[in-house]
Amino acid sequence: MERYIGLVTDFGPRGQHYVAVMKAVILKTNPLVKIIDLSHTISAYSVGEASYILKSTYRYFPDKAIFITVVDPGVGSSREIIALKTKSNFYFIGPDNGIFPNFLEATEISECISVQNKEYFNHPVSTTFHGRDIMAPVGAYIAKYEDFPLSDLGPKYNFNNLKRNPVKYEINSDRRSITCPIQYIDSFGNGITPIQIVDNIIKDLNIALEDGAEITLIINNEKYKGIFNTHFSGVPIDSLLFLVGSTGFLEISINQGNASNKLGFKSGEIITVQI
Image (cartoon, rainbow, N blue to C red; front, top):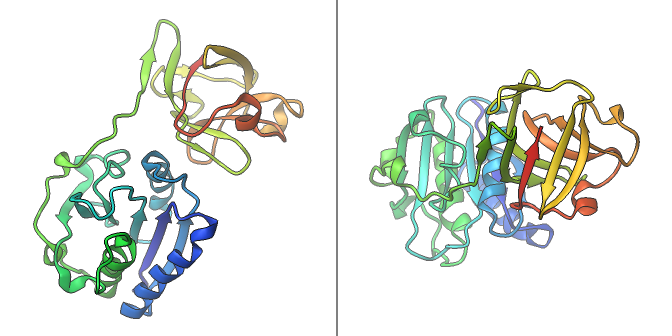
């Protein structure tokens, strides 16, 4: 069967040669694998953005896809490199720095391994580029075999012991508000929150949203009022609106404008949404 490897890094536009070398290492081990770039423009060191990209994309991939995430400010330190397999047959490889617990639950994991077997590494191993020398070849070997035994890579690791980066998420039912971070900003300046919307119902408040409903956004004690709508053109150009993005989260947007620039928020910033 065809196997796919998805890549996520914070290498940026001037780090494309790093991406190219990782792909070369993968293809040298397994020339038949298909490589897909999820994102290489994660903000430098942003574990939260990396988690969002994985969370919002991996389920759309074919069975047994492998995801390599190189957002690794602790590269070369004693931090572990982890290989995971989910019960739904997806594989993840990356550093133990909080990426995986942000979007996976322990009940979803069938195997969790600390990658230590140097037989699967590219040598010599750089202390500053484990993406090339450890994660890329390990991903290629997993993709090379129908059912690669993760236990060959190293000892079992308790998923519950992985490092965590607690994300502020406060629900106030009385005030009908949620305080949380901006988890990602796309190239249009839309701020994507972790607030889940299902059938136009805010899951954690159990509040139904209808087109035209007024929503208040609080950033750094400044209040902005906008309208909930199902599509951008439902409000006038340059108007603030809230809508359900394609990933199922509430997004802060401006019709044909850049909400991030206009309102002055950035990825990771704590905001409050009040209905």
